[in-house]
Image 1: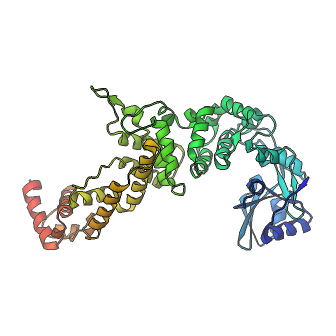
Image 2: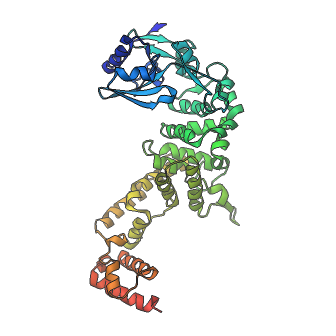
Image 3: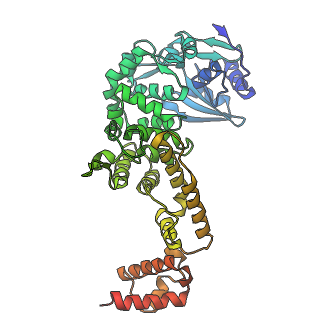
Length: 453
C-alpha cells in the first residue's frame, strides 16, 4: 500500500471518524480516487464501508436511502453529501443487466473485485492516506488507460452497460481504451440492445456534457456501438455535402455537437441531430449538385423518435426538435420589420438565443472554423430593435379577445379562431392597428366578407 498526499476536507474526515469509531471500516472510492491521482480536486465523494445501511442510520442525523436495495445511502453532513455503499459481493448476471443476488461482505478486497475497470477498483483510507490498489489502477491512471478488471468479456457479459461506460470514461478523462477491452466491446456491442434506454440515456447525458462528445461518437463507430444506439446517425457516415461543407454529414454533426456549449443540453442534442434527416432526403440536381430539400423537417421527426427512444422528457424533446425545425433560417438586411416580427413569433422569443447558438455551432462545423459573425450580429440587433417597439407577437397581446368579438356578432368556434389569426397577422404587419376599435371594425369586415355564409 502506498501513502498519498492530499488534504481531505474536514467534513469527510469527521464522517469517516464517526463510522470508524462505531467499529466499521470506511474508505474513499470511485471518481474521487481517480481525481486525486490526477492531481484534481474531486467534485463529489463516494464512500465504501462494511457497515450496512441499517447500521449507518443511527450514526448520522440525516441518512437518505437513495439506493438501499443495492446497499447505498446518502449521508448529509454539514451541507455535504457522501454517497455511501456497503461492501458487497455480486452473484451471476443472468440477464446481462443486474446481479441475480447481492451479499454484503466485511472484505474490502471482495468489494473491489466486483468493479468494472481497474481505475475504478481502488480505495483510499483517508485518515492514514493509504491507497489500496490490488489491480494496478494507479498505473493505468498514469498511462491514461481504461482496462477492464480481469477478463473484459466476462465484465461486459455481466452488465452490457459497461461497454458504454468505457466510452464515457474515455471521453470524460481523455483516456484510451486498452486493446483487449476494446476488442471485447466490439464483440459484445450488440448486447447493449438488452439494456434499458433509461440507463443508456444516463451515460449518454454524461458523454454529451463532456468537453468533446465527438471522441465518444468516433469510439462508438470504431466499436460497433453506433448502429446499435444511433442507427440514424450511422447512416450519415460517408454522406458527402457540397458547397462550403468540408465534412460528411456524420462528421459535421459530431463537430457541431462539440461546438455547442456543453452546459446547454438542448442545443447540444439539437446540434448532434439537426442534419440527421439528410440521408433520407438527399437528391441530385440535373447539374450534378447534391441537395437536401426540407431536411430540417425530416431531421426534426427523426430526432423526436430518438429522444423518445431514450426516454427523454417530452418537454425536452419538444425544445430540441423545435430548434432543429427552425435552424435553416436565412436572414437578409432587406427583411421588413413585419418579416422580423413574423420570424420571432414563429420561433418564439424564448427560443431565439438557443437558435442563434445552434446556428453558430452549425457554421463552425461546416468547415471546422468560426464563420463570419456579422450577418448573425446584424440579425440579433435587428430583432432587438424590432422588439423594442413592443409590437404584439401573440393572440394574448391583441387589444381584443374572444369576448370582444362575440359582442360584435362573431360566433365562437373555428370562425372566431380564424378572425383572431387574421387580426394578429394584420398587427404583425402594422403594429399601430392594435387598438380595440380598429381591430373590432377590421374583424367585422373580415367576418362579413370572408366567413359569413
